[in-house]
Length: 110
Image (cartoon, rainbow, N blue to C red):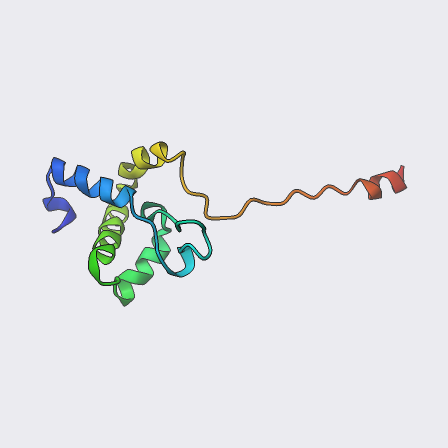
C-alpha cells in the first residue's frame, strides 16, 4: 500500500499501530533505551534511510518502519505529533547531560 493511496480510517489505524510500536532491537532497541526502546515514529531519518538502503526487517515491523520512512520522506512528520503529545513529547535520544559544578576552584582563586 502506498502512502498516497490510504484513506482516513486506514491512516488512523496505521498511526495507532505505529504509535504503539517500539524498536525491539539494534541501536535504538531496549538494550540502549530501556525499558521498551525508541518509539518507531521518533527514529532518526538517517536510521530509517539505512534500512531503506539495506532492506527493512521482515514482518509487520518492517512494514511499519517502511511506512514511517515514507511519511518522513514526504515531509509529513507532523502527523506523529498527536502520538508524541499523548506520550509526553518527543522521545529524547540523547542522554541527559550531567551538570558538574566545581566550587573548589572558585574558592581557591578568591
